[in-house]
Amino acid sequence: MEQGGRAGARQLRDEEELSLREICAVLEAEDIRPKGGERWHPLTVRGMLANSSDLLPTTLRQRATRAMS
Image (cartoon, rainbow, N blue to C red; front, side, top):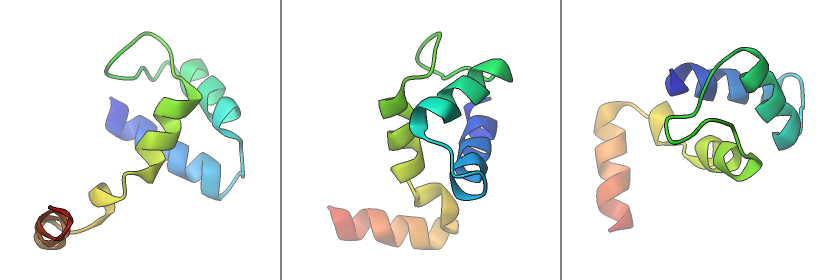
């Protein structure tokens, strides 16, 4: 369910230019819950949007992970 939230949050940020708090409100209104709690927090959304590894193909994701360690 959070995967759908991630895609939706990216779209809201990029296309609608909403703030992190506004994105939280939209996700909650759409009944999309975070995996670790009841409500979205702006820092959770920020971290989720900052995690770009889900945008990379698996092979590049593995290389990026190795390069970081």
